[in-house]
Image (cartoon, rainbow, N blue to C red; front, side):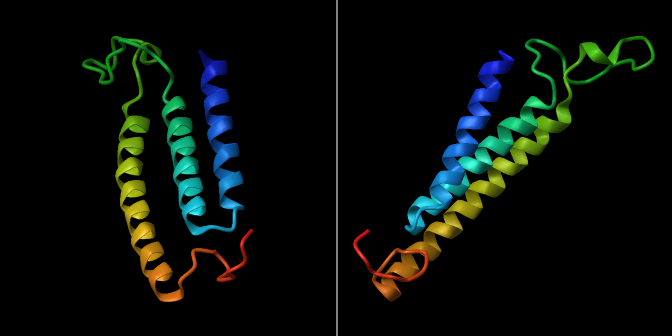
Length: 114
């Protein structure tokens, strides 16, 4: 399970970086989204991958905390998903405005057919 998880994070990161280096604005936005997904998966994985474990301790003195899931990474990922959705929506609005004003969607403003 861990190797599949690590491969997923690595592939998302590599794809995101590759898209960030592209000349088109939409590809840069998709690359940023893929990088945020990779970071979310990485943070989620740091909370231990346990299935069926309760996230909250009822009596902290009597139990082993290693048997429980950590709820903090789950809360951080949920917050990051909301923030990345809002940021992506803002980037898309800026992309449409920039394309309407300049007539091109290149990051550097050039209009060559590459």
